[in-house]
Length: 286
Ligand code: C2E
Ligand code: MG
Ligand code: MG
Ligand code: MG
Image (cartoon, rainbow, N blue to C red):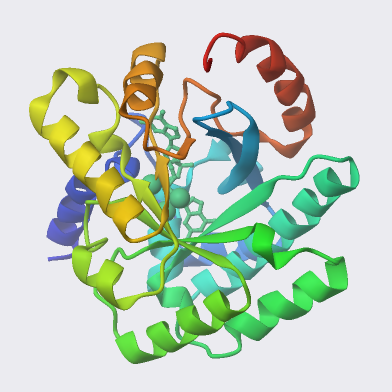
């Protein structure tokens, strides 16, 4: 059954597909030690306004700088962390690093938002909102620039507690984003019941949408849904110029993210990437 669950989960989310042939799965002990030793670092992927092509923010994506195996991707340890009660510790560290890092960019006149991925298993302790509020206060971080991207990989164990925590976060002016919309449990029910204010259309409906009738229909309907619910829309998986042009022809997508714009990069690479983008962006919008 565990194997079956793994297969089903991977099919549901393209982001969970194995990357290499030698995809190693790590034990809970190894992951716990990595968290403890500070071996997890944040990569950042830029998000760009479709209207102006300005860089509006970044998404933090965790990586494990493994002492022997090199860079390890989240699909090799997030599920283990969730399963063995390590995700709370992991998320808090990713969050602190993201706030600190982004605060540094703000100090250098780059007003960027930062998005952090959380899983439903983070929404069990009622002190989670206070943890974020206190960290933001300490770092003088403006919480209107924090986005929490929620992915529901398993069914919620305690939906009322989760809703309570999400509502508290929303009241602190944090943006709540429904990630991988259209896949897994990122459903219309969640959209109805949870005070989300950003919708991320999954890459499976974005890349090559122009030459696939069903992708295109789902993409357009999702963007329309976001607009009608007063939510900001983000398209993931913009992989090439054709994807960008098609999205831009729809004229209703707020933000784009994907390999066409940039792959996730270490924090130190971001300022020079932004310089390069100032050249590359010309001609993308009129
Ligand atoms: P996600 O939140 O949907 O993040 C987007 C994933 O798609 C990232 O994979 C990113 O590198 C990849 N991606 C970006 N642009 C493109 C594109 O144009 N085409 C394609 N095919 N893929 C693209 P990554 O970094 O391997 O992360 C995978 C998933 O792991 C994330 O999916 C997220 O759900 C989870 N994750 C990452 N960091 C964290 C974290 O700190 N905490 C938690 N709980 N989950 C995390
Ligand atoms: Mg995400
Ligand atoms: Mg996610
Ligand atoms: Mg996603």
